[in-house]
Picture 1: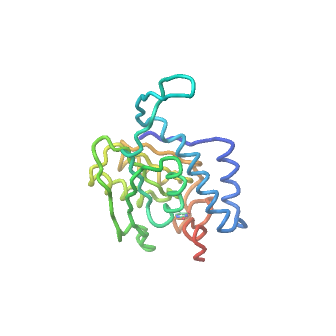
Picture 2: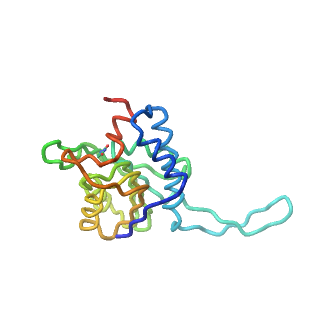
Picture 3: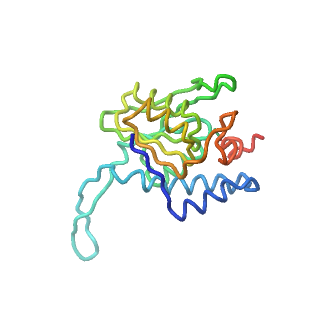
Length: 208
Ligand code: URA
């Protein structure tokens, strides 16, 4: 598995404000969107570009275009939705698929409650979004569903990750590429990332 931690001053700075328990939902949402844009910049380095001729006011020259119509982005509901806007700001023609998973609080296993994918071809670049890669069970399940629907080139974007979750993904999807803003210390007994930032869904949508 390819795993990249993006240690960029802008991400480190924004992550620190994001972690702060006094950061309110408006700023939290803005930061998740901005961090996602910065992560998307890094995570799309490998996508295909095509040459195209562009006519400047002075002469024709060689330019490039990305084929973002062959990109599919899959936020894992619900916290992954907080990352969708930032991703689409950079790749506005990407198609969006959704995976709805919630965590059974006793078993910590992911339960699927919604799934809708656009067409995924062999060469489609699929980006799965989940701000918190904690146990890795939801991400692993989402990647499994993407694969079942034809996904071959899959990249995961997580704002924060726990070592435990990375190990789970390494075992379940060794072909996956993952970008994170930080690998934190560990999970606590409730499977929250320590130090983390709390419950990303609750902080995005002020549900607690
Ligand atoms: N999901 C969250 O939102 N936060 C965690 O720390 C773990 C899972």
